[in-house]
Image (cartoon, rainbow over all chains, first blue to last red):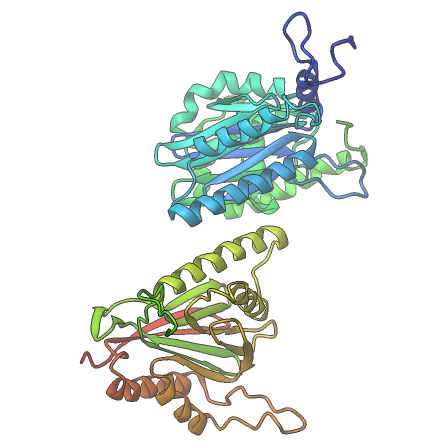
Length: 284
Length: 223
C-alpha cells in the first residue's frame, strides 16, 4: 500500500470506495506475532508465538481468559487487545450477573464487532489495531471467531493471524476437515504444528509459545510450560521418524508410557536445543 | 395531623441464625437451613452460606432476597479482582469489600446480617461480624440472626474471650481444636432451635482449614 490523499482520516472515503485508515489498521494486525486457533466439535485451542523485544524483557501476554467458557488470542497492538479483553470480561460478568448463565460467544463477538465499527466512523477516534481470535463454548458447541479492526467478524474451523500466518494457514487448510472429530491431544498437536510453521525453521520450544484450551466440561486454562514441552516432544520426534502426517495412534499408544518417554524425550530435546540458544530471537 | 406511615415494606425477615468461630488454623461457619416468613415456613432446605473465595465464606441471615443480591455482587467483584490481580482475595480483603459494599447502600440498606469466616494470609482463622450497613470488626467468634440473642451469651461463656481492654492485646482466637469447635456449634444450634421458632430443620456446617473446605449437615428439630 502506498500513501495517498485519502488516507489521513478514517472518515474519508477513497474514490474506489475504500477506507484506508481501516486497512492500515488491518496491516497492524499482520505485523504482530502469530496467533492460531482451531476447533473440534467439543474443544477450542488457541496458540500464539511469544516474541520478546530482547532477551532481557518478558513476553507480552497475548492470550486472555475472558470467562470459564471463552478465551481470546490477539495479534497486533497488544495494548488495544488488553483493553478489549477487559471489555469482554466485563460483558461476561454483567451477563452472568443478570441472567445467571454464561454469555453465548456469538453475542459477545457481535458486541465486540460493533465496538470496533464505532471507531471506523468517528473523526476523533482511530480503529483498534488488533485482531482477535475468540474461542468459546456455548449450547451449540465449540466456536472460533476472528474479529477484525474493521468491525467484521467471521466464524472459522481454524485460522491464523499475524506475521507469517500464511504458513500456518496453509497447514490448517490441508488438515481442517479432520478437526471436527479430533481428540484433545490431536487438536493441540495440530495447533503446535501450525505454530511451528510460522517460526520458519526456528525450533519450537515451550518458552516461545503459549497454548490455551477450553472444552465441554473443561474451563479455559493456559497450559503450563512443562505440559507444552512434553506435548512438543511427543510429536516432534514422531514427525522426524515417520513424516509430516503423524498418526493419532502413535500418540495414543505413547500415552501409557508417557512418563518414562517424556524424561527421555526431554533429554533429547535439550541436546537438540543447546546449539540454538546462542541465536537471538528473530525480529517480528 | 399524624405522620403518614408506609403501607408497604420493601423488606421481609426470613429468619434463621448464623455462627462463626475462628481457631488457630481453622474456621467454622455454620447456619441453619430454615427459611420463614411471618409464622410460616417457606422451606426447610435453604443455604445461607456462600463461598466468596478459596479461603473466605460468608453466612448471612435476614432478608434472603437482599442476601442473594449481596452474594452476587461480591462474587462478581471477586471475579474482577482475580482478573486484575491474578490471585484470590484474602479474607481480610473480602472483609473490607463487604463493609464497603454494605455502606454503599447506606440509605436503602441490604437487610442482611453477616458473619464472614475464613483464613487470613498467615493461615490463622479469622471471623468478621457486621451490621446491616457495614460496620465491622474482626473477632474470635460471632453469631447473627434471630437466634443470636440466645447463642451469643453462650459462646461468650464457652469461648472465654479476653477483654479487648487488656494490654498487650490478646488473641481472641479460640484454643479449641477443630472437632471441639464443631461440637460446640452443634450444641449451640440444638439449644437455639429449642427456643427460637425461626431456627431449626437442618444445620449446615462449613469448615475451612489448610486442606480446603469441608461441608457437614446435621438434623435439627423441625417444630
